Image (cartoon, rainbow, N blue to C red; front, side):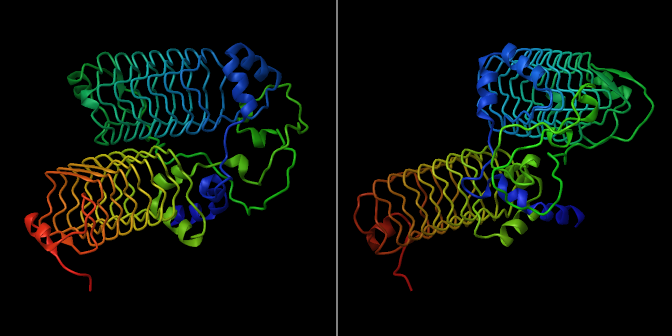
Length: 475
């Protein structure tokens, strides 16, 4: 209850964080241009402006050369760093939830105290990286090379470690509670201690370490610290929208710890570039973090502000559990929800064109009047889903289970329905012009005279009988 009340108190910042089109906070373009020009120019700028707030939120740094870049305390929520070179980069205390670091090279980088919750680091090269006290909860670490990495006291709760290389990695004090497939990771020579928490939630033992090729030592016992709920902190306060105003660059606004400020830093506020601001804009929280953190609180916020739109185009919500989420009217074109659980969620009227739902659980999910043109539902479980009036033009249904689904009045023009199960589905008034049906199961599906067949002709009772469907007029 306390956590729900706290998140409800964050409503103003939540709305600014992307629920209102046109108010989405993004990166500083001048900073991005300097960073892309090279680490030397970037580091010189940081040395000249030690109190500069580094804002690279959502910045596209794919394949960028950032070796030895000074990115301490940077805001890099959802930054795109696929294939980037970050060798020996300084990312201490960087805020990077949901960042994309797949295939990135971070050997020798310092990520001490960094927040990498839910970040995608699959196939990254992170040999000898410093991740002490880092938050890696729910991070994707599949096939990552963490040989010799310092993971002391790191939070790895529910992280995915399939075939990760953890040879000689230091995992003393690390919390691996709920981590997936740790036994399929390489732990040869890794350092464990009695303060290492295993995926089972139990403390590591000498026997477990020996069975997995790791070494074991005994330390002074301490309570494990959970980092799984850690998100960029917001200071609750009443929100008042302002006219453009100069921003203060005092320590309170930099996100830097007092200990990280230079001793000779000026005490008076430094004025930086004017920007459209609100009182909480510096204390940004990404909407998808709030959504994945607490669905109940998300729904409460949405119900209080039904006129606001959840604006998350192109978002990555793979493998998340969001049963019952209120996504009505959401703008999520191009988003990826592969392997996620959206059972009984509500996407009524949402823009979901070009979205991917491969292997997603969508039982009893509402998509009424949603735009799902060119969406991919391959192997999705959509039993009794409500797709009445939805635009499914060009959508892909391959091995999809749509038993009992409501597709009445839906537009399925040029859709592909390969080996899809529509047993008992309601197709009355649906438009299937140009749709390709291959080994599609229509047993007991409801067809009406208003149903338009793939040939472009109206459905008939004889066509329904030949395909095992039922033919009846609407009430």
